[in-house]
Image (cartoon, one colour):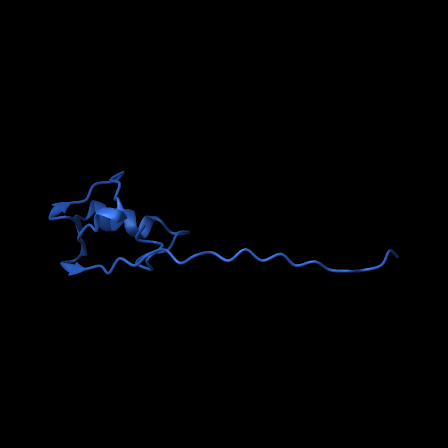
Length: 73
């Protein structure tokens, strides 16, 4: 979830995992641990280094289909 919000990269999940193991992230006042799950519908209070993280709804993905016409040969 933090990667989706732009607070770390999905490719380098080590960034967020290292923040969790360094006890820099809290969820509703409790220090986060690896494997914690967050229900965004309950509007949790997530903090990184004491700063509140703004949770925004996931943007709707747009499905696009491109059709190319190319004659054989």
